[in-house]
Length: 526
Image 1 (tube, rainbow, N blue to C red):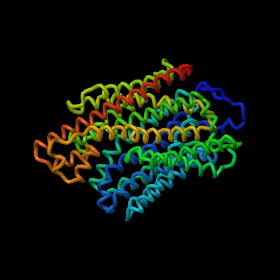
Image 2 (cartoon, helix red, strand yellow):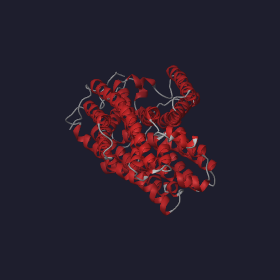
Image 3 (spheres, rainbow, N blue to C red):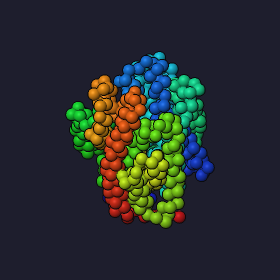
């Protein structure tokens, strides 16, 4: 495999780089197949964001502890991230449609059972089960798109629609989840998976063509175990860093994952038919596309982390109102993803990816050098700019990732792309969130006479988080409350300026690298 092949031409030096031809559908059947693939995409996206708004109701209904509530949230992404690579390679071996349908049946069944969970333990186990079957869904949808649409231009539009479905689902999640919890009960969020999956389960086997690697080799169980021993410690460690900071325990957990990663890579290089073909990473287009994906999501999730706190704690907006305020930016990712499809016919795709990342950097520049004290308008405008960049970069980078590998390896490539998405999401919260928290704690100053007049617990919470300071201010007399809120705002904003500057530099450098490395990728044919 050459180091940087065109995304519309594939090497075929070995028989295992070929792929099993799928029956060519008429165009309307191809787009119908894409429509069916959107159902699991929408479901996973809605489920990711909707459940957050059900946590207070879950805590009251099941009488959960704080630790149990964290595991209700964390069980799903931990299992999902651990199994993405294994499931992507499994789809290459047993058939991507087959794996998608198995995952859909399992996801719907576990969702229905979990909706009626009588205890926190049951719900945690159900969330882990959803992660197991969810890992079968997203790589399967993206790799099937690669094989349903071999034509680069049609594939690019299909990927833009796929990304739009994911972004649209994420935008609908808070509104949808809030409405269901308000009118029914928290389990309704999980129960809706059953009707959403029915069209795919009924029609998918007839309209979605099967595809697989024709010479996949045996499944290597030790490699699957190693991949889990890589992802679980890394993902869990990042989450610990996000909540507890850079503690020795959290860093040690991440270190264990990295050591297992080195063992995993060494084993893959030694196997004749590895679980994950490490040669994919020698392709500069593929590797740069993955890096662009990670940094785009890194920047987006890091931004959402501090914007949600600013809107709710400093601007006094409710969770649902703050979610609605973010919808224009989330929809902007959809629009940007669709607009860049015809754009790459006149502009080289590498420059589109670099331009999207540059837009994201511009959004962070507005935050780094702007005044946040005059209301939320500046931050929401910055989010809009950043979202336009993420939508453009994500669509084309995913197309380059899939187009730069042989079709037989599309499942593994899609799984790596999805893993990059999960890691980028976690890193954005962990790294930028930890820096923001540390800066806030260092810069918060209690008003004269306040620190000694309040309980130690309340003082500690106020010094740890912005939410703690707002809670404490509610219990103080007017002048002291006003001064504490002003000091907390200044401390929080100082951290936001620092994190925005760091994100600006990271994303800006990635934009430059993407523009240089991907400059040789040709424009799309008309």
